[in-house]
Length: 290
Length: 341
Image (tube, rainbow over the protein chains, first blue to last red):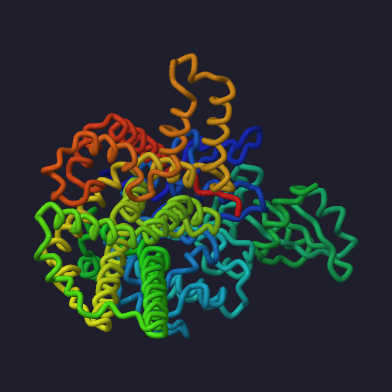
């Protein structure tokens, strides 16, 4: 295997998927490298889940897609030895007992460490004999995370893993992921709507809109390219002439978001800020639901 | 890197066979209520019923001063001709099998609804996404369900039947003893009981082979439909049957439409009923029976009957159709993860 394959975890070229007349993915190109934490962000119905499903071999697609050098459709069984996913909150079977879940995953997964899983569970209030249906939603997420983190996988895919959980569980979820799981051998691909909570852990950001990739950059590149400038009303028209991506008003001042415009020039107009990913998202996605 | 060392430490072997064993265990965990408790409860309920009947009979006998005292059943059997002994034994076998029949009916319902839900329920509650996140092939998943329906459920039901038979014999023996009759030699013939149980064990793979069309059809519906698997599984063959009957298609092919109902609709829906193959084979076997062979077991359940079944095209055509539908179920399991609850 070439070093390129070793380093590339997901490679998509011209990935497309349509449901009847609806186009879910439109000629998507992706190149996700090992050791990254990639946030895949988009409005509802933008194609995030479809993209993840294609990567996990859960749906048919057109175009080229390899995950860890494998075809997710024909080599799904081999792929699942290296790839883990949490498809949603609370998809654990409700009849399953906690200790049965640990036994079962330990029995079928060659890369699962029972000791690690028990250690993660010991930090929670989850009882080994409880059934999943007796646990709170937050506890189910904890259990699922404990199961997944005990698997030494190369790629972890998380699709809205914290939806509907309270802030304590959400914080703890990403904290554990970062502190106890992630290392340079692993890659995490995550989608979420609570983007402001994960932006500090991401290394890469992908925006998807109506089936197309509209932004694909490292967080460093994002910080370089995008800048916000807060200007007084008298300079607003001059700033507008520089073609900002987005404009909003706050406390009588205007905030403009720019992509790749010379900073010294902008600094003359007003105060520069680093935009939050959420602001960037709103700017990029404006008009989506219109 | 120390991660490589950790990898080596945590890596175990999960052979396909190992995984399959875990899948069977999972089926048992999920459906313990149907596989284990249902036959056990039916057995206990029937034993309780027998006890009540016997106790009532005993009380009634006491009140009316009836006493069967003095008749020694073992003396009676000693005076029987070998032919009559064989008849008595055959009668006992039939009695013991008959009292197990309610468990067979329960097994039918358990297996029917198990298969119908087995590839559907996890899609409708989305837990299929958890199972699919593990390195398990779809063929393994579906075949584990076939084995659960063909082996785990019937073996547990057979054990419940044996427990029921033993309980029944104990009750009868006690009842006889209370009335001063020693029935041990008549009721308890170890050789005959073992032969009966071996026959019950032999019936498990035969029933499974016969049940394949139903197993395949229910699994196919379960993995294919997006909602209401029961309606699909039952109504579709019935509607086709009605159309076939009314269109007189079968008459054109020189077959009565009853043929379609029996060999297609019946096989697709009711073959998981244990021993449902017996009706035809039994009577064919009876025709060929010569009196000297009646000692084999009972005429209903002789090796002749099974022999007739094993060479019948109905069995093998059905089994092939069942296998094809199981393959189709695997195909859809691979592609369908959604269902509407």
